[in-house]
Image (cartoon, rainbow, N blue to C red):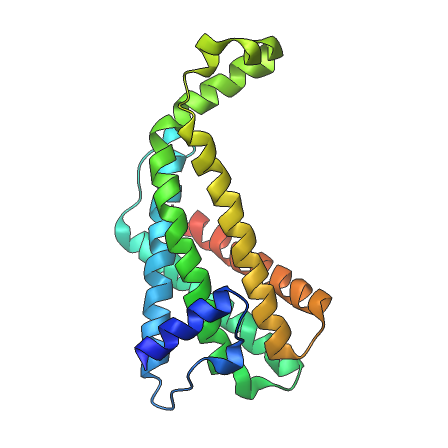
Length: 211
């Protein structure tokens, strides 16, 4: 069933299939695997976010990994809670398992792809921060090659990958919610936006408690 779930997820990522095509598993073993995958990926994203916080001096030290795992679990739980409420409001709660699993696997796959460019950019974050201060004070420095050469050209490509992956992730989530809730495109976008706000709110609350 895992291979079928994997290939279906790839098709959903390409908008060639919907959550209704995701395998249904009465034993809930597939759901456990999807949840575990989601928790681990969200924990990995929390790790790199914490490292970023230390570099920009927003955090004094990197939190323990168990705190990142808790934050990953909170992110998954918030998405699950929101999805159940959203489908219940549409009287389509029977679609919860396939919808939630499809959301978990697709969003986590794209989230995992974000870890690589973020980690590659982390060493250059203090340099970029300093460069931003210089450009703010003197915008003419943008024409100075010696100043701009502080950041390698490939960092721009990696910087563009992150918003591109985030946009793709949001578009897929909106597509899944549209199909699962039987709404138009605007309805799917609205539900996906509410989901993002819900997850971010939960993460912010628990980040304050854990960090």
